[in-house]
Length: 213
Image (cartoon, rainbow, N blue to C red; front, side, top):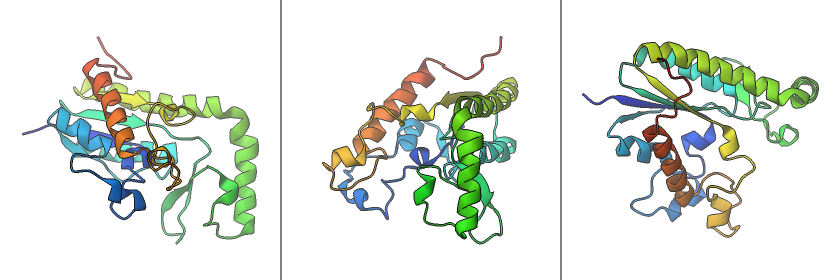
């Protein structure tokens, strides 16, 4: 039986921009794949990708935690954080916990009302923006603690930072691939291949977030 490779992350892990109902999907060539599928196939493992983090790192970590019971020795976990300005919130229908993406909050189009917008944007301005590094370190330490326990069970965890897609030009975006015809800063099909190669290399080099003796 094949082992599983688990992917936890935000929209860049989920493959936004390249999903079948989105405009850029029509640019897909026969061999084009979202990067998680390419990595899974390369290592001959079964792709497991629970619902994505909707932008909030704590949502990503919660999905990670809820999947722990289903992980077994020899599995691999690939997980990223996201922008700390994305927050856990009550869902639009007020029936479960969801999150609000933080880029930019001022233009978010699903506020319940103006008061909610004011409360959340003020919290971000005063409690998060001046202390982003502290929040990022807090989240990464949580992931590291979970990875430490998984390592004892023979499960390795690779962590990659959202700075891989934020503020650099390492991986082609949809906007670049379409010469601005589609304004989307998620990975293009070429970008997915580029990023898959990055993750494959790190797994081969065993660049785990924790490494027990």
